[in-house]
Length: 369
Image (cartoon, rainbow, N blue to C red):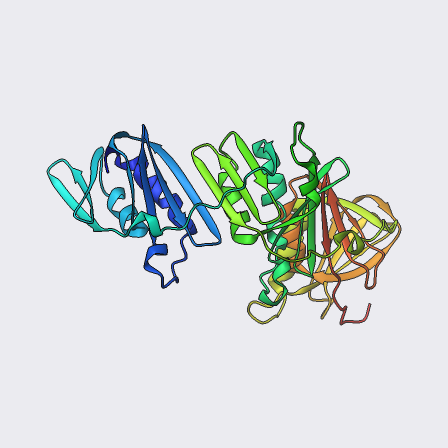
């Protein structure tokens, strides 16, 4: 192997590819990145057996080959070098030259490195950056981290009618969003439903700004090609709950409020709540004919009593919910105004705006009304 490239380009590519490396892995080869030099480009790949990320950058390649080197050490070294570097392999070493300086890193054979995760001959589509953000970034706060319910540890992607839908839930709240099915979508049958792991969803969100953003999926893997990035992940092998059964029909008890004003009121109520560290306070919500949303602490209604002006009020409601879960759902929205819909008591709270639906399960109201 022998090539010349900008140190900054190689450092950025190596740093990105290293994001998928499991730092706790005890297998030395999986702590390395695969460096592949071919005509006019160098590709750097990170792998943890469940995900792979390949980043390509331009280079003047004199001799093509592949080798693996420690990802973190290579990134740190390249980040401290300005200008171009000359790279070659010799005597099982990865040699980097910058001016009169010379550095060597140990290598392991490329033949033992796992192949990048790819999808062949399956469903595919191309998405705009806003569609990627809507489908993958918006539902992220509702993904469960509970290992026992592994099938909730990701986002559910499916086709429903003429819509491409994503949904995530942790059992306490739920966020669902959708876009119109992109024109020219191939392999429509596979969009019946797959579960994309949380770590993969986070990486997909990072790649949203790169175009063109192309997606492929089968019943085992999910693949993204975005600009110089090529990302692949295994899917979660499990059955996602029927989210449609959890979402209640409109109750007729609704109020529309400013989203940021509501989040500010929640912060004020939470500030006076006496609760243990990392344990969310519970807020009581009531509304009725006076077109106001009242927020109070369910444990002591006199300790906090916040009033927000609402609009388009129908019916009355009295319900309690976790402040943290309400904030997660409200934070997923971007609209100026959101609509709250709840029948009260043990009914979930629906929070909707545009094509984003959030659901927050109720809590016990401890203090008397």
